[in-house]
Amino acid sequence: MTLTDATVVVTGASRGIGRALLGAFAGEGAAVVGCARDVDALDEAVADARATREAADAERDAPIEGVRADVRVATDVERAMDVADGIGPGDGVDVVVANAGVNHGDPGEMPIHEESYDRFDDTVQTNLRGVFAAAKEGLARMPADGRLLVPSGSVAVDAKPGMGAYAVSKAAAEAVIRQVAADADQTAAVVDPGIVETDLSGPGGRAPEDVAPMFVWAAGEADAEEIDGERVDLRTWKRATRSR
Image 1 (cartoon, rainbow, N blue to C red):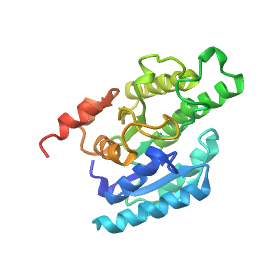
Image 2: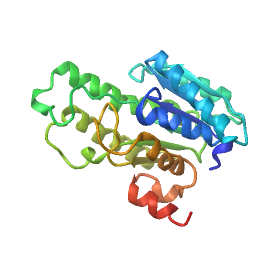
Image 3: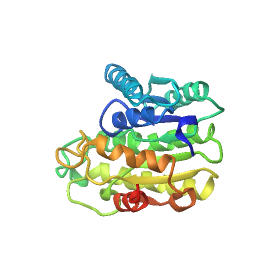
Image 4: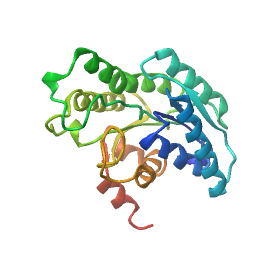
C-alpha cells in the first residue's frame, strides 16, 4: 500500500505512541484522522503533525484532522470513521491503528485480584472493546487491501506480576486481531514495539517517535500475507528493513 494515497485513522492520538503516529503518517503524506478524549491535547498533536507534514515536504497536502472520540462509545468511533471516510482521496479508510488505551495504576503494582470492578471494567471497555469498535467501524469502510493494526507488548503473552487488568485486556485485544485475520479480507496485525516510554508503561524504554516508523512500515511496505494475524516485533521489522 502506498501511504501517500491512503487515509489513516489513529485512536488515542493525543499522547504517547498515538501522537507520534499522527506525525509519522502525516510525514508520509497520508490523510490522517486522530481521535482522543482530551480535545486540547489532541489539538496540539494535530498542530504538531501538520508541522511535521510541512517540514517533510510531503508529495501530497492531504488533510490532517482531529476528532473528539471516546472509544468506549460506539457512536463516537462511528463518527470518527465517517469523518475519515470523507476526507481522503479515495473511498473508505485504508489503515486503522487502534491505539487508544488506559492503565489504571502503576505498572507492576496492580495485582489482578486487587483490581476494583470499576477499574477492571473500564480497562476492558477501553483496551478491548475499543479495539473491537475500531475494527468493526473501520473494516466497514475499508477496502480489501486495507490494514488494521493494534499496538501491544510482551505482557499480552507472558504474564508479569502486577500488570492486572491491563495485561488481560491486551491479551484479549490480540485475540480480536487474530479473529479479524481469520474472518476478514483485510490485513490485521499486532505490532509489538517493545518497551516504549509512555504514560501507560512508565519511564524507560524507547521514545514513541523512535518506534513510529515500525507502524508506518506495517501499514504500508510490510507483506500483507506475512503479517496477517501475526505479532510483528522489532526483530521482524529490523530484518525486513535492514537493507535500506
